[in-house]
Image 1 (cartoon, helix red, strand yellow):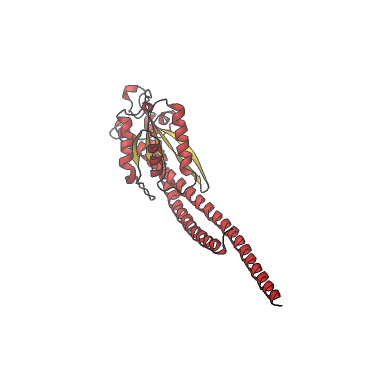
Image 2: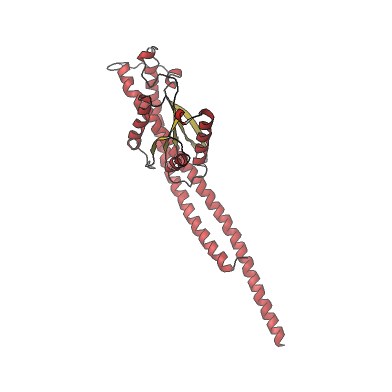
Length: 289
């Protein structure tokens, strides 16, 4: 049985750990508010951009030769999976959900490494795929919490260039979507080719384009695809902070339970020691009589 000194030291260290987890919970909550607001604001812009792009895409000729390459489907010889993870961990099952899903998806759909590549953000995901020998084509681990479009612009361009240069024929985004502070859902979304723009065009709005629709579309489509990657990263960042806040709250609650249990053990050990001392005193007094 541990001594009272050992129990007391354990209580002190657990209280210190609880202070840390509570502080991390508060930091994550503050970051969540900012990330949620940024993701919400960008979502409004992305919806409007999609409306414009979908409107143009729905009016262009159906002749395949005149389509922008990002709109045209082609035989899928190689698929790319852009997997969004975090850098630090301490967010519960946030990363494991995405990584296990991606691993199972690759096993199910591909018989050879020649059929797919992995693009990953975050140190956790990069370490996971490299240790297991997956073909990692691109990676980015320096994504800040206060994310801006410029932070990921070069990375997004490199990802899209893989499709433009026909190194990949299909691109999927896999990440955790922020629902609320205690809930996230996994998303597997095809980004390229942008077939959803033609299949589900927005409400028809009359626009006047200068110089013409094809040239405007040539500029907007890459911007739209880059924005989709940025939007997914913002969404995942909000989900990450929510998961970390929940994990740290659970850790703090668990620490409180451990402290209560240790305090009870300490009081029992203290009572036993006092009883032992009283018994020895009484025994000694009886021996003197």
